[in-house]
Length: 379
Image 1 (cartoon, rainbow, N blue to C red):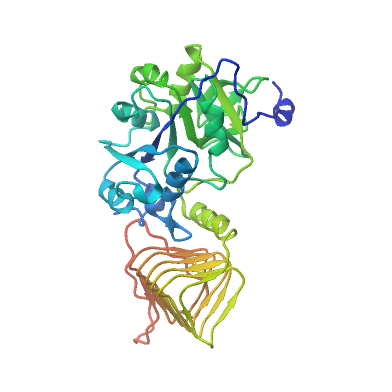
Image 2: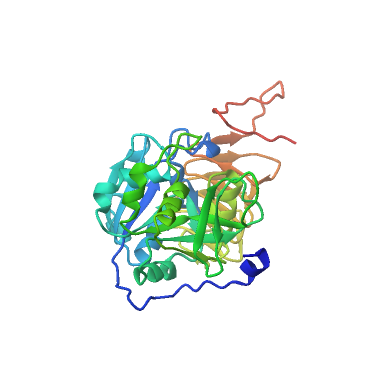
């Protein structure tokens, strides 16, 4: 099929077969990766718990599964499993029943399926990568799979550069013909999104996989195995916002997308010398004193602004203190402080309990304490 034919192809979300039977689904969320591209933020914490608009990105995946009627959910955890457990608990706050499944090492997405085998049983399931973000969720995709007899269903997004992604080649009917992980030569513009639907047939394939050149059991090899065994794998082309939040700029983009949809809400204290413009959320316990906040922006619980400016697309975490500084298009995590900085901070991701301040000590030199893998840009 030519690229022009693929561009014109419409793959419906709803395509129930005449012999289809309704299938209840389980959920499997992957939250065990190392998060090396977000270091040093993830050196001691789970990358899936880094917040987007003051809510861990992992929570969006949980909420979307529950919204799609998937309430029995297993979470694959790694070294930071304790933090994930503490954040999510038994899942009741989300309307879910959570089972935690430790994984010895992050040995690939297909290895996560192997690790979750006992929990999954013979149930079809949705596997959701915990650091992926979809703006509109998965309700339509889950309904399509529930009504289908397919052994698998993948979500695809047309992108300009697929060299760092898994890609799918489709036939004229929109069925998946071939999966390739990180192709060196472009063979398809359709990247595989980090949300997958599988029937129990996947368990016949995964045990026979061999590690790839990078030492992992690749989910693309597992899907290809389904196809090679004569199973049907459906695909849905999405026009939704899809972000793999593995890097700083991706986190900021997801933050921008979420904040673009917020509605003004003022639960904290704002004094008469402060100005709020546009869609701004001031959480309970926050104090805005002699400051300006231009939305869309969110100020977390217990945060305090003194003579500060917070610009659009900024998320200020809980108990953050901003004093005599300006910041925009940034994320500041909980319990940090920024004081007396004369240059405006922009396009930044600032971790927990970070202190950024200007002092009058002489001689006038820069004194820095930066963790491993940190980055500091100075103009």
